Length: 254
Image (cartoon, rainbow, N blue to C red; front, top):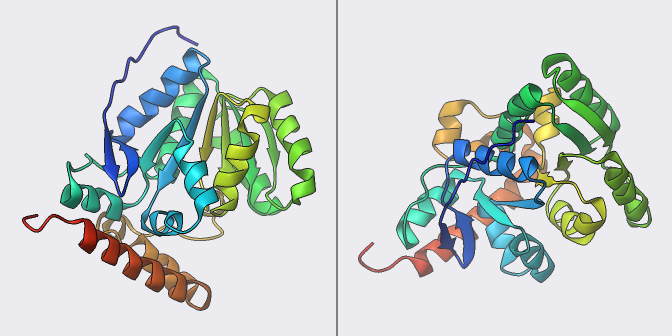
């Protein structure tokens, strides 16, 4: 690995009292690379509208997210909200986009990656796709996300023993954030990045919204259309709460 410093400096913008990094996807990728080069641990948090709403009442989730070393704006709605409550973020840094950017970079320089989460067949397929399409990546280990709380310590120790440069955690919120916060020190991966349902997209289990819907902040609608019975109420409630929060926080002259 080349020993060079990317020396990325950035400011944070507070969106509903959450310090969000004011960076582009390219800058976020360089921040991660810098930490891997110099073996400085980096726990990444990401926020979207639904998670920000959940953080208002879930104190454990809030503590887990705020305990991250850096927080990126995963949702386009967070970027828009930042412009109404203060300085606007330059762009969205979606967790899945950062994952793919890191795989691309890692294939060049030889990152060791551990894949944790999702169903067994999804996890296995993700690892195989990476081996086939990112030949420079070393799959340090993998484990599906179907394990009990009693198994968490042994899994964390397995990640530690794998000596991963990057740990991708594909579990739902708030389980993902709380697991990362609880076991981060034990796992000791250089970079830990929670990627939610990204493995499902990667493996082809679900489709990602078209780019035009992503740009309009409508990925949530695309998800609802794929799983309407399970998701429509969740997104309707969280989106309405987010809009109310935004209305209360927006200055009168904004």
